[in-house]
Every structure is written in C-alpha cells, then in structure tokens.
Image (cartoon, rainbow, N blue to C red; front, side, top):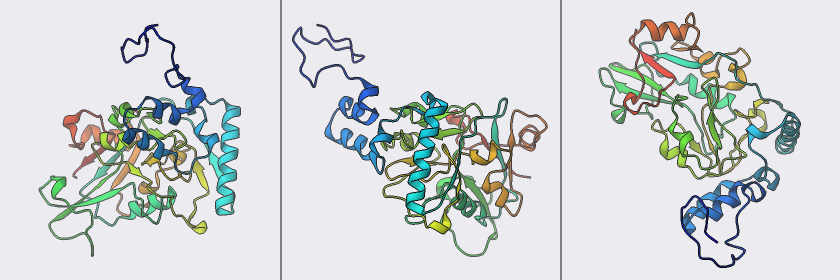
Length: 317
C-alpha cells in the first residue's frame, strides 16, 4: 500500500518488514523514535548521546505538559530519591506555575554595572551549576566605552574593576518572545511558558544541541560530562524546570530563577548585584521598575534585527 508518512514518498505495494512498520512514538520513547527517523549514522549517534545519565524510566517518561498531578508526584519522588542517593541529603523540590498576567523581564543599567561578576557567582551557587567543568549561565563582557561591538569585547578580563575607559555588559538567556531555540527542538524538550520564561525539561532533552546552534545569544550550555557538585555546595531548594541537578548529556540555561521569581523573590543575580544595575519585574505591570525603565529610558536589546523579542533590556543613565 502507499506510504502516508509526512515525507511524502510512495512505498511499493509490498509487505513491510519490521523495520518498515509504523512506529508508535510514545511506545518507543522519544530517543528510540528519533534514532528511527534520523538519516545517517552521525545523526543517530547525536540523538543517542543525549541519554547521558538518564534511567530507562526517565527516557520513557511522558512530556511534562502531559503529566497529571499524580504523575508529577511519582516523578518528583524519583528525583528526590536520586538526589539523596548521590548527595546524602534531602531536597525541597517545587514546581511553581506561571503567574497569570505576568511577563518577567530584566532591565540592566550599563552605566551602573562595574563588571564585578557577583551576578555570575550567585547564579552558579543558586542554580547548582557544575563546578568542574565550570558551568555559567551569565557572561560579563568588558567593552571599550563608545563601542557596542560584542565581538571586540573581552569576557575573560581580570584585575580590578571598573577599568578606565571600559564598560561592562552582562549577557544571559534573553527569554525571547519568539525563541528560535524552541522552534528547532525536535522533541519539544524546550518551550516558552505563559510568563515568558523559556524552560527545558532535562528528562526530555536528547542532547542534539540544535537549540544551541539556533540561539543567537550563545545562552545555552551542554553537559559533556556528569556535572561536578560537592554536597556542601548543593542548593536544596530546587525547581523541576529550573535548578534541580542536571544529568550528563543535556542542555541547560538561565530560567530567571523561576523557582524563586514565581514565589515572589528576585532572581539570585539581581539580589546579589552590589551596584543595583539589575532591575527585574513584571513588564506587563506599568508601575513596575522594568516597565517604567522601558517606557522612559532609551533602552536597547541585543540583535534587535533578528526580531526574537528579547526580555533583557539595556540602557545607559
């Protein structure tokens, strides 16, 4: 019979072999499915690489959006047990939902930021990022005053800051309104939530790194090895879609500390900033600091021409 696969080909009217039989995506699991449909050994190897440290139960887990409250309880119990086995300590795992009528955003004053990197260190500590190899969601770039060419900037600067005739521009995930990373994910492991935060389900990520290639802000990080984190460094207040300990073979990124911000706290980077350069809040609230800054200051976003709709705004006082 004719093939009705989306590829549009026409199969001969012959019996199908086991390899040609229709595939039940949910029965096989997303990684097996991808390996079946990807062409070329290299693509299949890339898909398989995402398995990392995941158990079979995690590989076969249904998509986050399909999980019932009872399903989530079982998933969270498994994560707690795995974390306790590894770190010999209990964690508090939460899953706060997006707040209605809220669009989170950052406004960063480049006149005030002095390049101290307190935001970077606070982010690493809060979000259980690997210490070896080092994983950092935030980059601070040192630029010459009057020059916004990021390619000429230095993100490995050392010594006392601020330096004369320099200014500092922190970058991270921009939580785009039109995120290119989401559209290229072949398994739906990353998506934009109602409050504008782009999240990743680490149990669904296959490690193909398409999202990394698509992100124009170089905001995503891949775990090539199992992240190293000492017991005393573990932040036990964790979120399922945010700072729970990630396995090897997945992509991770900034998530505006949703386990904090959806419960009324500031992101760790904003709380730690000693100069007050970072303003965070609800862009949909006209009385919020970020809304007032966007309305009254001469703000700009990075790579505006790409029309990704960034939610990190920059300005000079």
